[in-house]
Image (tube, rainbow, N blue to C red; front, side, top):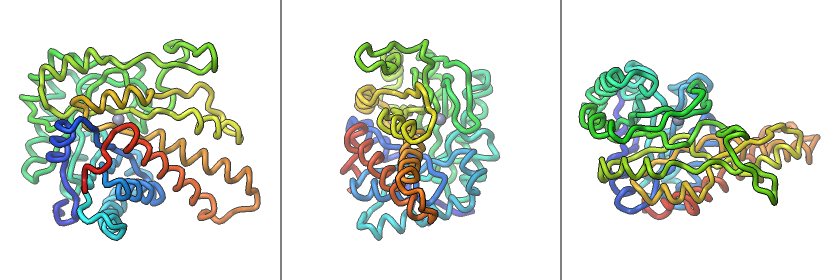
Length: 333
Ligand SMILES: [Zn+2]
């Protein structure tokens, strides 16, 4: 049993209470590799933003759970070295699929876990979430649960269509499970293809797809039912068109990739939404920089040559999200 506290990590409790009160959201960035983690920590340290490092099932399979846990421990020390005296870093399990997965993360030093029972019947989701909460809370580890189903594909989590969270269920669910935060479905979606062209309209000037707006009415209903309760948005990448264009220009093929417009995420950040998950935008930033680098430097074969611009591009994107979209800069001095 390793406590996250001995690793210098924090849980989400105070972080979310401050975010809800302060009208901003904390970024939750997924990581699978060293360059991504360096970029996240550099961005958070420079902006003094609280940050959540997320580990998905796919990431654990790709990089190994033990290694990722030690990388997060290293990240705390790295942040201090960068001059962030009091780093506010959470190590969070993204989309925990079973009690055992959550338990093994709690036992190995995670400070927060998500149990995703959203695909289960309502009562089974409650029972599973409650079981995880009872275990995690013994060690002061916070638990995120999910109600409602998001569309899209993220690692091994996929659903053909979304079902908005039912506001009439949230009080019962939060009370009976004891969860610390709740991921809801209001139209965000996993992956780089969040909407089909048929679900969008086209901007007549640019020909680009304009996605349907998020269901802010559902969000506000939920806020009314659970005042001050931390709400989480998954699948909230914006799929920046300049990155998609760079990828396509240099040999990629991502036609009609579309995400959540940043103005809508900015608006959501001011509400009870206090955690916004961003993964695809980092993948796009990395891929765009690498494709461009290879096209312009066909003789390069040292990974450091193409991973340096990839890391820089991810860092720029993370800082942009923190400062221009979520408003979490300066909240963890
Ligand atoms: Zn997710």
